[in-house]
Image (cartoon, rainbow, N blue to C red):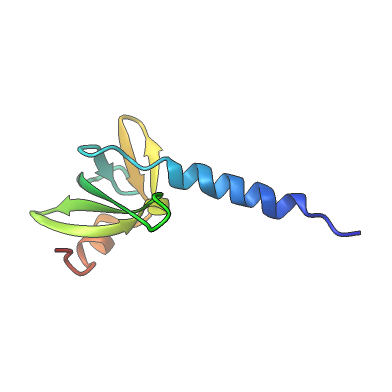
Length: 92
C-alpha cells in the first residue's frame, strides 16, 4: 500500500514557508539573537514566489534563501550565525 499524502503535506508546508517572506525593513538576527541586519529586497522566482532575501550586513548586501529566515519576536531569525552570513559573497 502506497501513501501519497506525505509528499502533498510536504509541498503544502514548503509553500507556506516560502510564502512567508519577511517584509522589507524587517530586522534579522542570527540563531543566538545577535543583530545581523535588515531586509533590503525580496527576489522572486519565475513562478512569482519569494526565493531570496537581500539583507544589509555591515553596509554590504548578502543573499539568503527565504527558507533560512524564520519569524522570531519582532523580526526574523536566520539559521546561520552572523559570522557565516558576513562571510557570504556580497550581492550587487
